[in-house]
Structures are given as structure tokens and as C-alpha cells.
Image (tube, rainbow, N blue to C red):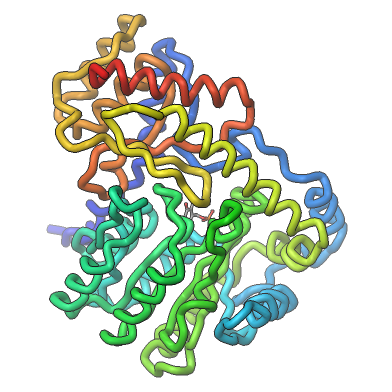
Amino acid sequence: MRRDIVHEGATNLKYEIREIVGVAREVRGLGQPVTWENIGDPIEKGEVLAPWIRDILHELLDQPRSFGYCDTAGVPDTRAFLADLVNQREGGAQITPEDLLFFNGVGDAVARVYGFLKREARILGPSPAYSTHSSAEGAHSGYSHVTYDLDPHNGWMPNVDDIRNKVKYNDAIAGILLLSPDNPTGAVYPREVLDEIVKIAREHDLFIIADEIYAHITYPGQPHLHLSQWVQDVPGIAMRGISKEYPWPGARCGWIEIINRRRDANFATYAESLLAAKRLEVCSTTLPQMSIPRVFGDPRYKDHLARRAGIFAARAEEAVRAFDGCDAVIVNKPGGAFYLTVMFKDGVLNGGQTLPIENPAVRDRIGELVKNVSVDKRFVYYLMGATGIVVVPLSGFQCVHDGFRVTLLESDDEKRAWIFRTLREAVDQYTGG
Ligand SMILES: Cc1ncc(COP(=O)(O)O)c(C=O)c1O
């Protein structure tokens, strides 16, 4: 008989953000129009790439080299340009172009970074967790992802004592992951918190992974810090990309910045294995990489980022206001990215709550679907059936709290106002508030 061919970690591959799409399509097929609030794709939600960025891409289309392979690690000019940017940051660690490695998006980088760690080496990540990290780490190790708490009663800040304890009592932990601005909470971590995390990492000889995909969507007044500026002498990997900030998610273009590589021989060997692995697949997308020095280096880029951060900050305000005075939930105002997490207070949800669904076929199907699901997924399914709004349950982010994540991406002002108002009404009606 053939050997079992299923990887030990296969059951850890969950991506609720996309899995909910299958259910939503079914509900739509039964006659309920849907509003997609599940995925962080600004283009899907109506944002149009700035004309000057499109012009740059048009110019690149006229260059024959745009269509070829590039160096395995990435386009040399682009890596040199980005290394310079890192080196110009105030008080930051210095890197060389060799410390930059391109991938087909941060999602691809995540798969490699966890995939090429020694099987027994674990990365401690936040809960709620962004599924790409938690699934990749869990799948790689064959166990569920090891997590520390983000505290909803403290603006979703990392619980540093929890990190310290987990690290102290689990010597398999080799690194700490953090996302700032965070997905799904939108929290941005102040320097004090980052310093505490570095201190723990240094004491226990760990390395740090910082997902910085939203680093340039930090709202006015929030700290704007890159890993290279706060990691001090600890080895680290920052993950960056253009999906969210151009925004061009379909480019599948992201990179890692390897910091303090030469301070730690074991870390250096691991970093080298990432490049060796990349060689096997030749290279990542060329044209998007070629666009980076032209776009990031354009005098209009700074304003572009500031304008978008301002827009999302205003929408965050609008979303939080929609939940004013709502006793059933805890809503922390995000400081960056483009998500809002609405958490139900403990004990508010139960397995008997419903929302009225007019369409009988949808009502019957939702009635079927809510059997044996978590209480927040039950809310999410009823919300979908009753209003068509598709959000992601917090339990899908490896989280012990109930709730859901909605995006701040809807670019039609009226539609966005309807979304937030309808969510509030649904929460009130569902919880009897
Ligand atoms: C925190 C975080 N990291 C990475 C990604 C994926 O980025 P990319 O499009 O570069 O693969 C996302 C996408 O939503 C994300 O939210």
C-alpha cells in the first residue's frame, strides 16, 4: 500500500479570508447580492492606480528588459535603491543590496521564510493572527501556530508579559513575529513596545520578523518606524511590498530586508538558504521590481502616501463612530492599514441568535451552514444572509475572542456609510442591543 502522502501540517492551512468567498458565492447564487468586505484588495474595492504611476508602468512596457527574467535576488538597481532607502533612515541599521531578496509578493516570502526554517524552530506570532503567517508557520512545524496575545483592552497592543513567558517556557521558539500596522487590528506599535520585544529577543537569542506591508499606511500622528530603526543589534527580517501602497496587489511583488545578518553565523546561513531556494525558481516578477525606484523615487510619492493615509484615517474614524455607544462590542480605532476589528464582549454571542432573512432559499441555506460553527462565524453567516455584507470572523484569525474584521476600502462614500450603518444595526439586532 502506498505511503501516506499528506504533510503533517496540511490541516493547518486555513485562509478564512478567502474560504468565506465560496459560501458568499453560494448565497449570491440564491439571490442575495453581496458586498465584499473580506479581502484587503483596494483595486477590488474601486481604487484606481494614480495616473502618474500608470504612466511609469506604460514607459516600462516599452523597455524590452521588462519582459525578461531578472537576477534571482531581484533587479540589481532596485535592490541598490532600496538598500539606500534603508540606510538613510534615522538611527537605523545599515544593509547592503545583498541583504535584499525579492519574492512574488510578501505571501510568497512568508511561505519561504517559514518553509526553510528548521522544522523544530518555531516563530511566536500575534493572536489575532494574519492567516498567511499563522498557517505557514503551523503547516511548517506540523503543529498549530504558537501565539502571544494582542490585548483588546489595551488598543490591541502586544501583551509583552505573555511574550516573555512563552519564550521562557518554550525553547523551540527561535523568533518573534509582529505586524505593525497590524492586520486585522490596525494597531501601530509605539517605540516602547518594540523596545521591550527587542529586549526579550536579545535575552533569549531570538530573531525578529516584522511584516511591514502596511508600514506606509500609518495614519497622521502615529509612530512610523521600520524594523531597521528599532531592532538594534538583533537579527531580523522585514517584509515589504507594493500590493497595498501603490496599490498593486496583482503585481505579486514583495521583498525581505535581512538586518544584522553578519552578526549571527547561524542566522546568516539560514538567510543564505533563502537565496539558494529562490535560485531553484529562477526569479520573481521583473517589471514591478523595475518600477520601484521610479515610483518610490518620484517626488509625488510622498504626497501619494500621505493622501491615502489621510483617507483611511478618516474612514477609520467614520467606522468607529458607527459603533458609538454599542455595549455589545469593543472597537479600537486603528492607527494604520485599512481594517477595523469589531470584537464582541465575552458572553454576548450564543448559538441561538439570528437575523431575519427575507429570501427563503438563503434563509434555509444559512440555517444549514450555521450548524457546528463558532459563534462569531454564525454572526458572519447571518449578516451575509440578511444584508449581503461579507466580513471575516475573528475566529478565522486564530483568536480566542469573537468578532469580525471589516475593511475601510469601500471608495464609494454612500456605500461605505451604508456598510458601517448596516453593520451597527445588525450587531444591535443580533445581540438584542
Ligand atoms: C499583513 C499582510 N502581509 C502580507 C500580505 C500579502 O502581501 P502580498 O500581496 O505582497 O503577498 C497581506 C495581504 O493582505 C497582509 O495583510
